Length: 264
Ligand code: NAD
Image (cartoon, rainbow, N blue to C red; front, side, top):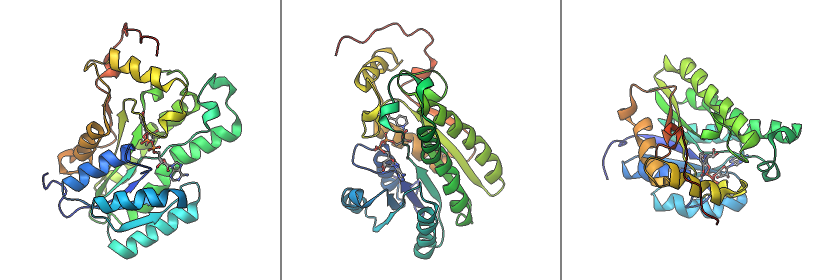
């Protein structure tokens, strides 16, 4: 435990359970002294998120479906009323119909394309718009992306296209908000077994492949991602914005991936 984040207030969006990347980030921030608020997608998740928030001493637990702008508006209005200011926000949200996270990208439907872009890309910009207004003293915003934005990964399909757009929006947001002392970054995490990841075809195979081929010869954990998030969200990251930081055990630098995963 340290005091890197003492006196800082942050909103964590995208906590579903204790396997969520949002949980690894929340724990690292709380451990460093941050005061946290959480948003959850729907009533069903409230009973999961409430007790987890409580474990980290947080009592601010609010609903927000990012597909509904009234809901986003209400979240930030409530946060402004409760806290007045915000120092950081974590966007750990993504969605695509799992029937299109397998097979060919070329077969993507327009409906799922638009919904994937809305929930996984536009939502970060919508949040940045509102968060900016309550970051009077500057702040930090963070989103989560994946290597499928840069290179073709099996089954990632429309989500890869969405992550490429998300990474581009990190650059544009960083430029717009930088003059107000707000930094905007992304972490490109290696594969981690979460609820969202379980919707991706052959995910167990992808995990094994990454473990065998990454320079560190292992997969990353939500704790690894949490520590990198702490750097980007705290004063340690004061000179860093518009960045996509890979937390993937080095997988992205390997040009010649040679070790095949055994049958699983
Ligand atoms: P997760 O299932 O734990 O979290 C995904 C979250 O998105 C859930 O809390 C869900 O409620 C939320 N969400 C989906 N639609 C929403 C909506 N309309 N409104 C509000 N919230 C909504 O899975 P995760 O793997 O922790 O995912 C977090 C982020 O990390 C995602 O952006 C994902 O793409 C990204 N990511 C994951 C991996 C991985 O391998 N798990 C790798 C790189 C990046």
